Structures are given as C-alpha cells and as structure tokens.
Amino acid sequence: MLRIATRRSPLARAQAFQTGQLISARTGEPFELVAMAATGDLDPDRVVEAFESKGLFVDTIRQAVADGDCDLAVHSYKDLPTDPHPGLVIGAVPPREDPRDVLISRDGHALATLPPAATVGTSSARRRLQLLRAKPSLEVVALRGNLGTRLRAVAERRLDAAVVAAAGLRRLYTATEDGGAGPLGLAVTGAPLEPGECLPAPAQGALAIERRADDPRAEAVCAAIDDRVSHVQVRAERAFLAAVGGGCLAPVGALCHAVPGGLELLGMIADPVERRVLRVSLVGAADDPEALGAALAEAALAEGGDAMVRVIEQLRASTGSAGA
Image 1 (tube, rainbow, N blue to C red):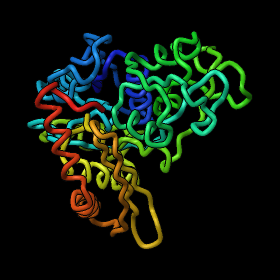
Image 2 (cartoon, rainbow, N blue to C red; image 1 turned 120 degrees about the vertical axis):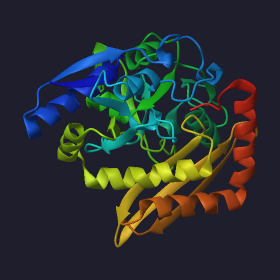
Image 3 (tube, helix red, strand yellow; image 1 turned 180 degrees about the horizontal axis):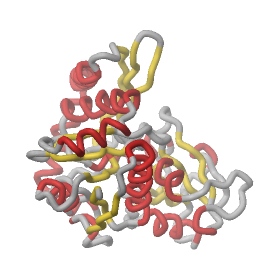
C-alpha cells in the first residue's frame, strides 16, 4: 500500500486524497494518507514573515518521504522552496486547477467594486502589493489560518473581503453561482481576480507529487498521473522564480499558458518597501520551459527587478522572510 504524506489541514488532506484516488484509478494501487503538521502549522497566529524556516509548510512532509516512512508527498506546488530536497524529485504534476486568486466577500464584490477603504485579509505580500497597486486606498491586513478560518473572517464581518486561491475553493468546496450560501454554508461569494489584476504565485493551482529519486515503484506511479501540459507550464513559472531569486515566499508572481507556436510567460516582482510592482512577459518554445523562465527573469531584473530583489533579500535577512 502506498503511504502518502500530507499536511493535516482539510484542504491538504482533500488534495492528497484526490491524488490517491487518481493513482488508484490509473494503477490499481491502494493508498493511505499519513497526515502530519509542518513547521508553519505549529503557530497559526504567527505572521509568515516571522518564520525563519524555508519550506515551512512542507518540511516535515518532505522529510517523511526522504526517511522512507512514506512513499509520496503531495504538496501545493507554490509552497515548495525552489531548492530541491536531497534525495527527492518531483515525480508528477497532476492536471492543474484554476491558478487564479479569488476575492471573497459577503456582497459579491469584484476588486473594482470594493469600497475604497475596505479591509481585505491576506498573509501574502504578493497579493497585498498587487491589490494596493490596483486600489491604493484599501486597508490590507494580515490573515492566516486554513481556508475555513479565512472565509469565516469575512462571513462574520471581521473583514470586508479576503483573497484566497481558486484551486483551494474548487478542491475543497462546491462553489455556488446564485449569490447564496457559499462554502461551509457561509454567506460569502467569490469573484476571480484576473491575471491583469493579481498575477498568481508561480505554480499556484498545481500539485507537486514528490518521491525518492531511487524508488522505481513510486516513479511508475507518478508517471501514470503526470499531466505533461501542466508540468511544462509550471516548470517555466518555477524557473522564473528560481532565476529571479527571493524564494517561494517572495512577492513574485508568474503564470504560463499556451499560445500558437509555444508558451507565453507572465511575470511580476514587487518591492515590499516602495510598493512598486514590475510586470513583464515573454513568448518562448514549449520544449524548453526553463529557458523561457530564465530569459523572462533576466528581462525583469534588467528592467529594475534587481533592485527589488535586493530589497527582498534585505528584508529576509532582518526578519527571516519576505512574505508570500
């Protein structure tokens, strides 16, 4: 039986269970989930910037696979550090969910219709800086916790709105389109933020299935569930992030999609101090997504992104992180 490591949150368990179901459907392999807490789960009230650990939402899960206690780990790909874990490889990226962010509110607001001084919750510097670029009068406040906790903060009127990943909503809840009760029976609704408003984190909406590099059984299982299109596009986004620097917690966004003859990659870097946002794009070949990501990063750094990255690195040195 395959042992699949996952975080304990309802969303993480749902993602891991759905991955296990896909594995069983395609290979006949039975599975069991092994849920555990990551470093970032142990202090849910602490802001992300205060942690010193890289990979704070995946560290113990990865180690369980490396130690041989589990066969596979299922991660939200955007949470993975750009540096690989010794002895582990990304074996598969199943079909990707909607990569966009979603604005959650009680009244069905889009970003354009939010009241000028609305309070919006997010723990992500990437989201915060893009929201303030679009609407500088917003009050963007720190909001951590699992998906249900963040939705309740809006439903209970502690916040006017919050920003979450569309993929999480789709994987964990049944969306409603009639303006009625939303996820968890809460009176909230969601409006997608288009990439022009808020570019998602690199690899958002994608799952990374991690395995030991020397495990042929896990390699065969991963091959059966890998989605080539999703995997290639995510490779371009992650290559952009790695070449820019700053790590998976930096205010960096990327989104890749197919165009005639290849791929188009959109990227952004934000300065957390000056609240400036730089956006870039580039078209390249689909057979070398890493080269596309690296080329876009080079262009972004040349257009002023290098100074932004220095600010991010200075913040990391002083606080332990730069925000997600």
